[in-house]
Length: 235
Image 1 (spheres, rainbow, N blue to C red):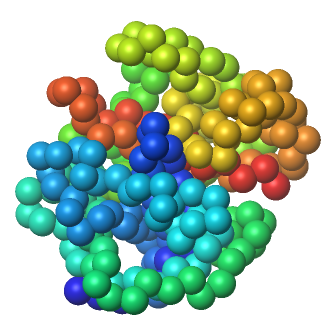
Image 2 (cartoon, rainbow, N blue to C red; image 1 turned 135 degrees about the horizontal axis):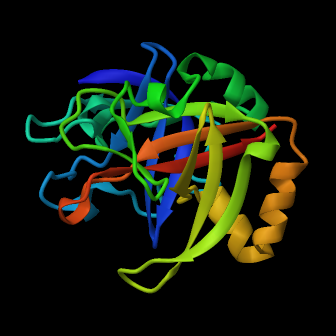
Image 3 (cartoon, helix red, strand yellow; image 1 turned 90 degrees about the horizontal axis):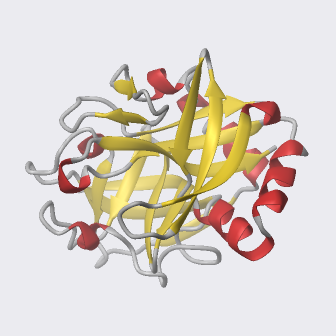
């Protein structure tokens, strides 16, 4: 068990549940706090309810939080096990302060990579479809960040072939490659759903630079860990 002071950087939404991550400002590197009930065989157990995560909650982007957490069990798979930590809810959980998006991007600059491949320690595979993924078991990071200019991102909506639902996605030019990534980032999805795709694109176009939080999905149903956008800071 260890004490962590985390700058919350990523809040992603899946229905009514949330996955969160943040920068460990004591030890450096990214941490993915998970509920103490998190289990390798029950994916839902690894997400937070809305009373813990989302705007105005404990895990809200920019919050500096202190908590007690332990390393993941041995059966937690890499690459996610690199950052997974199980929170002890019996111990105090405190909000120490709150940063703006500009301040957050500055505070976590040490975790920004020059390319998407570098963010995942060389494990990224770019498919012919321009989607990108990391194979389960890769020993490396599952969380990171890149920075791009506004002309290198274009949002679009696609239909999920598995459930027929509309899904926010982004075409991103990073380094010498072009990617098509899903965008489960809570704030971006909220902007799209309430104001429309054009408003979200306008937000991007009006920014000088964009801090893009990137992560990997879990390997559902034998699929690899697809790269996704966990957060967007329009700076």
